[in-house]
Image (cartoon, rainbow, N blue to C red; front, side):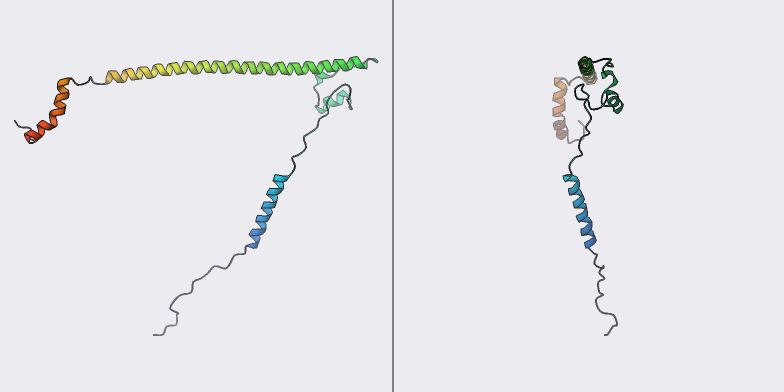
Amino acid sequence: MSTERPEFQPIDTAPARRTWPWAVVGAALVATLIWFVRRAPPAPEIRPVATAAAAPAPAAELVKAGAIPAAVLPPKAEGPNVLGSAMAAAKNMAMVAKAEFDREVQRTKSAQAQAASYKKQIEELQKQLGAARAQIAAVQTAQKPPPPTDQEQILQTLAPVLRAGNGGGGQY
């Protein structure tokens, strides 16, 4: 028997995919990841410190730049008393720092008071929950039928034996 078709059909295979583009993309991804990981963190922003002894810029410029608050500025020196104005500026800076510290202490105290009030509320709610659970248990025990008497317990125990002795018919 001759046939024009071969006995087994050839298996069609998919053309081979190119792997080099994927290798290049993977290498670029790894290089980028390593660059981000090993890159130095950005330098922190440096603001000029406002001190009376070493102020390179006038105080008005520092206030405009936002480096110091306006309340810290010393009063305008009207004469040669430079040391007095420097002391006044330092005193103003200390007062601002103390005011901020006092504000933070007050916030801490109020947060502690609020936490204490929350603890009281939790304790109160726990007591209410315990009372509600006790009430539920009391209602459940009140709805339960009374326990069977001794005679009923004996009859319940012997009922299967009595039925089997009668033949299960229930006739006497």
